[in-house]
Image 1 (cartoon, rainbow, N blue to C red):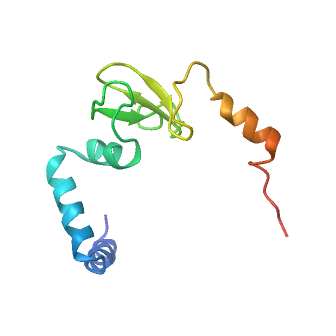
Image 2: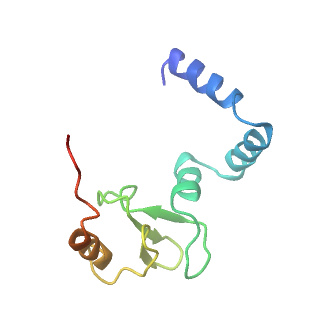
Length: 107
């Protein structure tokens, strides 16, 4: 990270409410590395075993940040709908495509 990026980040963090700053500080202290911190925020605990060692598939090299995997029990789930992932892509994607959820209007 470049010096000017650090300064912008620091300034942005100081603009957060004190309780949010405290929560972020505690979260950073709790985790040993960037991957664990990011997964705690973006993936959350495993819905099956409540384990905190989780990753999204993008983090483990499979190029899909919408799928979570628990490194403790092996459970895999869709981060968007929360269902266990039996097939990939998640069946809710097909439903959303039919409903037009992925269509973009371009003016």
